[in-house]
Image (cartoon, rainbow, N blue to C red; front, side, top):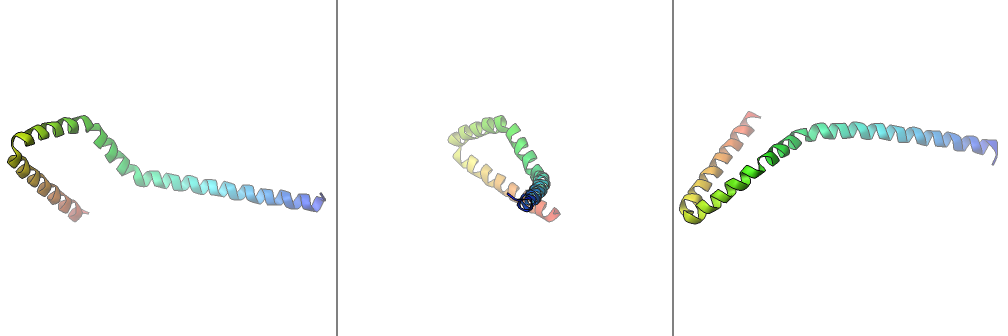
Length: 95
């Protein structure tokens, strides 16, 4: 291999290494942005998981209550859905 070819290969290797380094920087910045964007969702998910035992107990109680009084369960579920819809409308209006 001649010196010229060796020099070409060396310079090409340096360009490729610089390109890889730039890609790594870009990836690091993008991953940081991704973490910042998904942070509210992660916090919400963690909060939801913290209430998992209470949700399980509450759903069991609601099931027993629903089996004994199906009409009342139906009415309560309709009320809860309407309350959730109102909260959704208020939240969207405040944004």
